[in-house]
Amino acid sequence: MPAGRPASVRTRHFLRHLTETEVAILAHAGNGDISAGFRNLLDWYQQMHCQPGNANDFVISGDRSPANNLRP
Image (cartoon, rainbow, N blue to C red; front, side, top):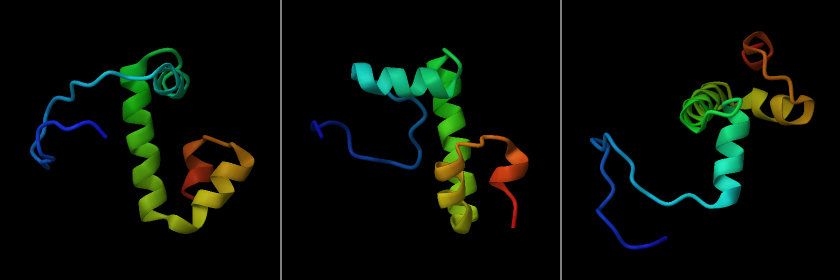
């Protein structure tokens, strides 16, 4: 990782160059909108962090519906 400003939980803006792969992942997660994709990935991570038993079910099934991501 390139050197830069130290990490902080108070950061409000990110300024970094994205690789083509990173752009493609964010665009796919946001239906073409990389900002929405970033927020969607953060939402997904939060769900998986709070419900760790569901991470494998999500990855295997590919089902993104909220009801299936939060099932017990």
